[in-house]
Length: 248
Image 1 (cartoon, rainbow, N blue to C red):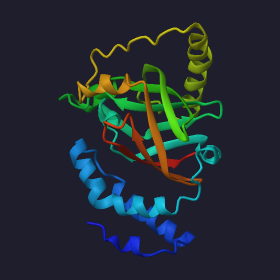
Image 2 (spheres, rainbow, N blue to C red):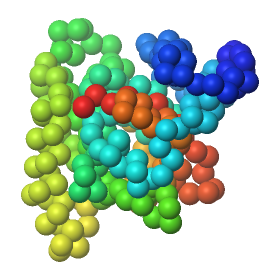
Image 3 (tube, one colour):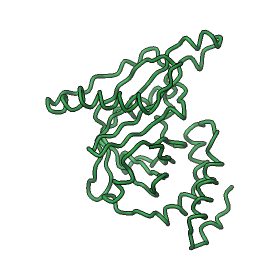
């Protein structure tokens, strides 16, 4: 368990901030996802002191001022959002959250099919990868960041060709410009996803989560490279926590 001595020190220089971040990385990098209850216990016993310490020294509190730091591409290195692990095996370094200055953002990740099948490596290598994208509108509502789910898209791709920044940008821009914006002007409702033949790890939770219409998030800490995020669909739901690092 983490010592709470961190919370007793008021001064927080750049080297101390870097030390805290490195200690967080040491605890979450390479960690295999566990059931939500275990991850929440890990947060409470291992990560909470760091979240408190960094949030006490959040350099940008104003949500409107946070915009300049929020725009860009982030990747979640740890999260208690069960949706992230509802689909087949998610590839950590092919998971992205893109914020555009026009108010559109997207959560995009690649998942590998066949992880629960007793198949040879050669056979599994021929299975496609599953790419999932959730597009949202974000903005400030009542002094808080607010996310509204707009639409979701899926694609089956060659798993030998990685999902990289270029392909993410191209997919996101193409969908927003050719489908999302035109449909918004026509008030066209999103189509239901075809989830047949997918290995859903939490069958009851996945549809509930991706069909959620809106949520509020808070950057407990944000700088040029890091975000500690608290997300909540409404007051009746327990909050989720995410550590995200900026990659562009």
